[in-house]
Length: 431
Image (cartoon, rainbow, N blue to C red; front, side, top):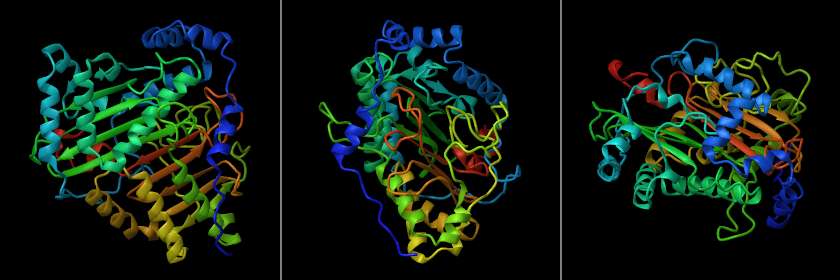
């Protein structure tokens, strides 16, 4: 079929769309939370099991967190030899220097709180909800301004310029949401935890890394000398624009959605039928047994499969094969991958894109939902070396009961033990 270009909503339309779903802040949910700090908020959640669907999910997460790390696979068997140690030209001297400055600003108690062994399981402790389920590391909002700045300097030195800007956008939109629902003490630009693993080093024989986690932004960054692995990552936004205040005009995750929709709309009807594994975003055919470690859908993850604590999930291939697509459509897959891998420094990102392209014979695009210009949707691009998930969600703080385009989640996983740099760690440094 002829390739279409999805219509992009104007800034004014995007603003009106989410503002139509601002919640009633006089309800008990918001009135109670407004009186709590982040720790009281978490305690209230644990003590009252509220909301119950999320509490039940966190109990499932506890069991998954106790599992030894294996890695996401398509069939339960980790494929070996996909990832190799290599020199990616990362400016590791600069990154280590920024990390050493951070450590020099901390007292012994702070350093002990920040640093973990390089093989600590706390790498896997991240989660997306605004509830602080595991208060590990240093919380950015609780440290002095010079330490906050030093943490950001480590993150900035590690990521690409455009990747750091994307992370800042996610943090600022979280802050904006906190203002919209009058819970700035729960959600703000600094309501994130930062952990350091191992001792910062330029040597491949002394790997190290860091983890940043909080609401709608989770980044695991591993270094092996001048080689970097940034995976898993979770980047989300509710809403996905800022329409007021000093950061007005900030947008995030629109490009990933538009590229995915352009790709799906460009397929032939037969290919679209193969790619579309469910017609509806909440389809009766989705497996939902109440066993939250394996269910196809739950209220928090909704359609995505590889979120928090899903480090060992089996995700079978489904959809249309990338090698059956035209060169232009394959180029769109790489454009999507580039956007979702934006945190990686440029050279490392290019090497990853080349690797992804080399596996197009084993790469699948799957789709859930409609693919009209105004439809909300989910898609996944999956191969032995990468999993990219994009999902439009229903409201958590906004009151839309059905998924809308202004609430977006994206996830990047490196399957077959690639997450957290596991596949390139030597035996003594493995998780």
